[in-house]
Image (tube, rainbow, N blue to C red; front, side, top):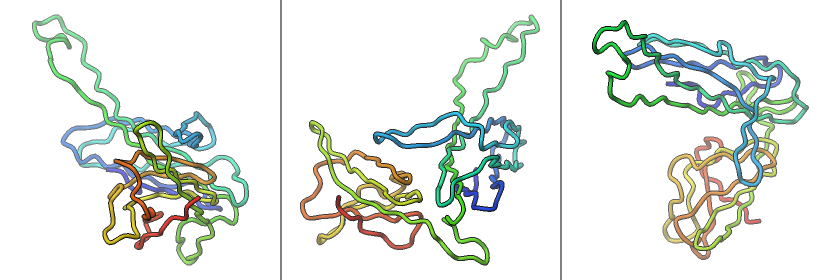
Length: 230
């Protein structure tokens, strides 16, 4: 279990806290890495970087215990700018003990497949004058989301394309076509993110219904927002 799932380092803060909890019955070893996150040509890009560090970068968490990981920003962020990162938490495979020469002691004696799990958590860092969370004693949100949509067709495939011209990310959930007698669900859960100044697209189950427009809950809002066509 990981929380929070959307950590933010606000202006004036040097780090954000992320907790990892092992609810399994065995110890688990994890590697924590931070990558710069961008979107271009509707593709997700992850790049190596040295500005944001995870401490500790490696951790072994006993069963039933939790581990605090500090995500530390070591560099400046331009005023009014939001930087996006992805925190990857990888489960490390267990190392088989060496054979002692006795029958059945070889690692090959155990038949099975062990799957390692990867978690990907978004991390955002705000420059001066940009607030995207309701901070204690300062319920001001200065970041703006500006979403425009269109649909495209490539062969038999249809896509919903959304551009964000604002200066903060948009997390899109509960996306559906609206404006008719009955809403048509596109994705009832998390559709995805559109970073500031970026464009992303998602496949549709079929052609867009005539006369309907997409609406979504943006960044956890309680009510849906109808998106503006391009």
